[in-house]
Image 1 (tube, one colour):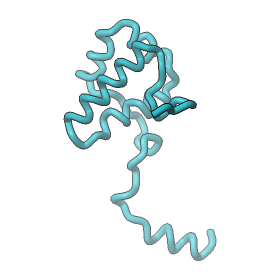
Image 2 (cartoon, helix red, strand yellow):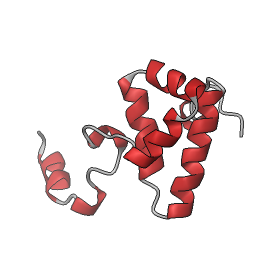
Image 3 (tube, one colour):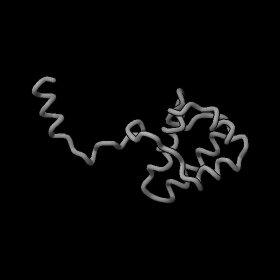
Image 4 (spheres, helix red, strand yellow):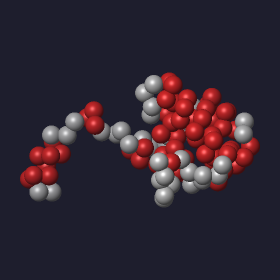
Length: 97
């Protein structure tokens, strides 16, 4: 590694490390959230059909919210999207806002 790269690596901040879904290892929905997803058979079937990478991203999106209200809203959105057989908005190709 070049000296500039080494300096940048040594100057990194731990508080900005391991904050993304792909850096978390195994990420799963909490049992209560998974139970709510399982309660809708169509949503659960779609969730189970998705690859592990998508489930990790979507799970992290739900559980990484700082406020309980936001986690709840994201879980509801995830269940609605799964029931409609679509990805969460951030993972769709055509992200209509």
